[in-house]
Image (cartoon, rainbow, N blue to C red):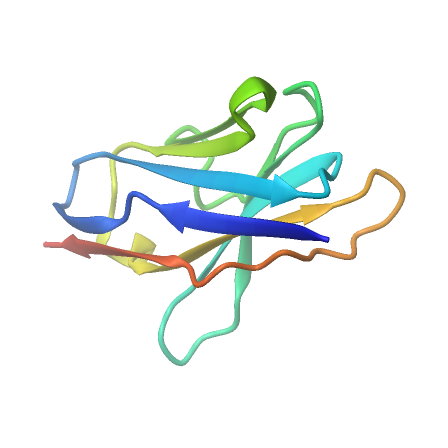
Length: 117
């Protein structure tokens, strides 16, 4: 079992930046990912990274603006968010999965990102 704790959210003006962190404990999974959910909307995929920092995927809506990374020595994943837009406003969650399936688990409480115009 893996437990994940997200942090780093806050209120930022459009065009600004935030860096989210996800600290893992317990069982370590090969892949880590960020998801987000805006009020009244479905949860959507944002970005994922493999064990060694490769196998990176981004949603089209964040390509060129967000960067996902991980530091296994610190058991931490990061999401650097630049050029933020009001439509990026959401609760951001991280999750873990093994290499052999997409059974995401370890969901934390999330961290709220609010981007003002």
